Length: 233
Image (cartoon, rainbow, N blue to C red; front, side):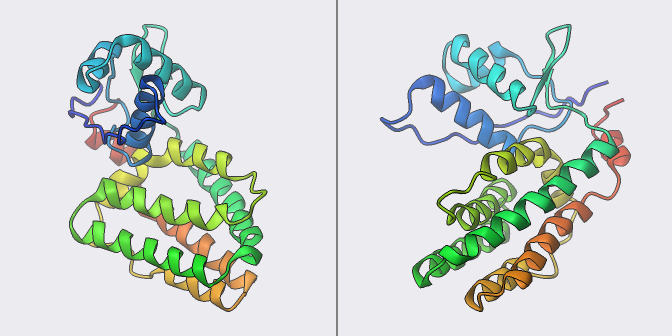
């Protein structure tokens, strides 16, 4: 039985640079990245179109693209939902995150100047502010913005699309893990990363990013229990 939890969407700001199809895709993608749509929740083209006040066509196109990115799955009965992944796949996705994100951080390090370090520090402050307000979705997006900015300092960074694909697949589970914590992580790995960048210490930066990713993994102790709580069976 699938969970009957009502899902919500975090709307991307509408701009002249985004047409309707792009806006719908970015809104659904952002909502998945921060875990607003939980695993097993049934989605429909009509329901999403009504929530977004658009026609079914851009929703259908966005869902097809997200399915190709493994963020959602469309079953034979045309049921659409966030995939319910196995424990082995979950561990594999996190192992890939460690490999890709430590590499991305290390290769970005030589391109940091004081201006970029200050901007990264400001992004870290924004994460704390959102979680202190109880805004888990916004806090998750702010955390991703920190990592994205760090990795993107390498002008020939090719890992970022692969990293974001992993975020898409793991976002709903990370959100559930965070909801079960009494507080945010005990160790601020971002401070450790910032210190490593200031000291130009690539080894310390790799260690901080690996610890940060693994901390996220450990917030989710029991996938079976999560699925039981969500009434997925």
